[in-house]
Length: 150
Length: 138
Image (cartoon, helix red, strand yellow):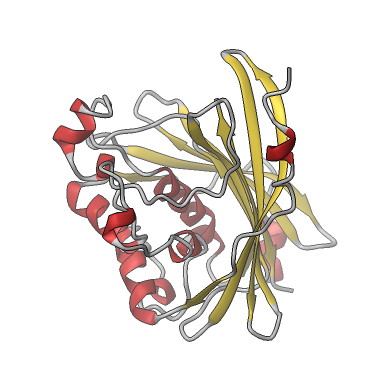
């Protein structure tokens, strides 16, 4: 029997409400110090390191939305009979670097759901397509990421 | 700059770099990415409730370190086009991690180079493999 219900399959193609983000020099500087960057352009905040985007997209929610573990309840997942969620891989395509002053819109689509048999039992792979573009529709970064549920 | 591209040989290794996260650097990283998960700063909670041996070094932080190995090698001679990585195993506060990188392919027409990346633990196991595609300026 399939672990992915027909209801769960209807999630394929669904998107989250777009996130509006603004890149600031100070945020880049903080990120660059914490990640031990060596290049001046990153430390000065003239340009964002590629992985800066990961933090920029994390939700800023009220404290009441954080669990006892400190994790924000912001899952974009259908209900599955398996419950343990792990990060899979992520692949980013960069069209240009992010810079202070950029005003961006990020849209995440649940792109696919696949069932696989792992060595330790069944697995569900959920993949997401993220597009980050300017207000004029210029695509800046694209990302395909996967979560593994077991 | 074209000389730089021409001189690159498939199989050559990039400079390695060691990273030893501290309580302070992990706190600042998680504050910067706005992540309050307690396994990254609360040692008693991490060991007693989530049963890790110690405070956990963030997976995406290791991804960033990996990206730096190729970016610092590339310098101003080109741009990062693609970057991918996976976290296979956890690592903990107190461990020193090392980024490793090696050129695996070169496309003379597109002026691109593929670099295989990894984060290695002290035992020498690659706990996070990755790769990058960079394009050199003409």
